[in-house]
Length: 363
Image (tube, rainbow, N blue to C red; front, side, top):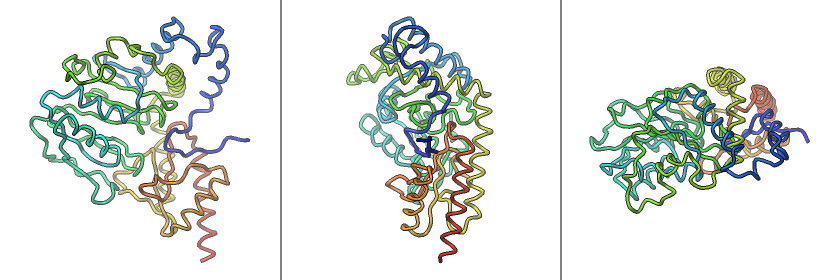
């Protein structure tokens, strides 16, 4: 069977070149006589794998020396707890709520501190990013929290909020590595790997060193302390070794192709192809305010649920898979992460044009 164009929001498509390299090394990595899945995380071979992965990520994102890079587990959901447990001093934090993941994050934070909702787009089902000017931030807030790209709704913070000097925490799970960012503007960045980095099971945290402290609540579980993981260089316990290895292959793949700047150029082109079509279509329409559109997750609908279902079914049969929108919003969603080739987006638009022609001619 030929590979399909996989528009899944996550776990998402990976570069074919990375998969081929992993397949080539599956049984015998670097003449070690074993698979990466089988080797000790404390071996010299794996030590090089994880150190190379960190070095390449630092190069890709130009991460300053005063930031630690951690390879953890538990996904974004665990970070919803780790962030407040480790960053709270005044036990106050401000959250900008732009979707389900930010809602889950603030709900979790409220178990440990006073979490304020200082901006929300829930009134219009999260189809826009709220006004980021003149936010009413709590003067005692330890940090301001955002989910930078909202996978379900297809929105993106295309500018950062003015935090009035407060530390900015960002969930970048679905936009990390897709465009250049100035890491120094953030106190902490985290990302689940399964959207734009690698396979599910690995979580990356980039944290400014001054925030790594053992001054955490007594009830903070050992495994939820950033300091524990930082002191042990992500090897306090057995890390997701194979996931880290694949992430490392993805980092090298990106570096070989010009880094994040080159990917950003391609991502802009891919998104433009799809959004330009949606903006002139008589059948399909985008669901997000134009100024807040995501480059990674493009959401769209028709006015008829039966047509939506028919489109998803016929697209799947044509090898364009996982276009069904999240169950909470319905419609369609095309996730066009770094690994989605431009040919995939062109194939999708070509299919949509023909589908639209058939539907309109039949009406």
